[in-house]
Length: 358
Image (cartoon, rainbow, N blue to C red; front, top):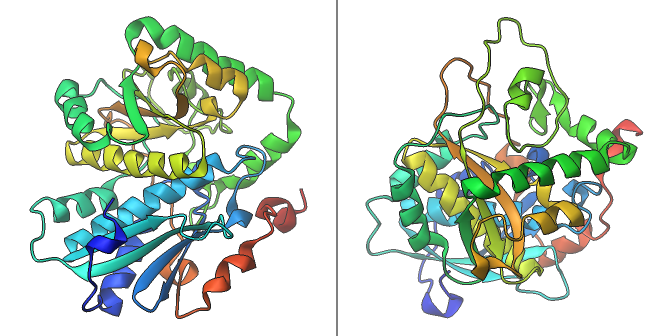
């Protein structure tokens, strides 16, 4: 990230540039499409706040995945500003007294715009979570070589799960499902955020869920409620490759950094015509997360902290599931508010039991 001191903001982006950048940032993936972000423009900076009421208290009690989602949104915003001709100087966690004040973004006009900037924004707008089984990814070695330049710096690194470790990853996923089979709070929360209507701007719509056969073809994946889809073809086993993103530490700044790296991976994959799906449930419980520590097959990764998995493959054409909707910009953006806004979100009360009385 660019340090704030490196940029001298002589002028500011127009309102239209900011709105478009926030819209693109809002396309970031998040746990159950909860979209836990709020952007505030104040003077010469944009501020990213997490909204802890949108953190999933049962699936993500520590807020780790919540912060990863916010890191993805932060990097999506940076890419959108870059394409519009603006540099972003990002300060992560600028106020220790407000842990949900995720970042401050100061902007200055660029003299040169990267030729790939527009392509990256286009990839963000076209990408979606491909939950279905996939075919093997094309030119995967070239893809991972490109990722090494994008992600293997700082606290975040990735590794490919080797064939010899796939059984361990599958067992971690099975163990995770078994431990949660009787957790009614987790399943209530999951049911609230999934199976929503097509018009809903949050959650995972019922039209994006899998059938029993499709789910059974996956090696790893969250056990969402199943659907019956008329005319669904027979499903071959998933041939996607699996990447593990891990970090040297397990603090909030590490989680945000993981989100930034995840953004780079998802966008790079989309630019190469590859389908992706983020898998996080296997990292949510201590037992299954511990089983992933050596899943990448790299002994140098032992002792690191697995954060998320990413399935990468080639989409099969026989079934196309619709994308999840996003909240409108008016719901996630404010201008010229008092910077104590973060205090409005101080109590991490989950929305789902309040709204449906679960």
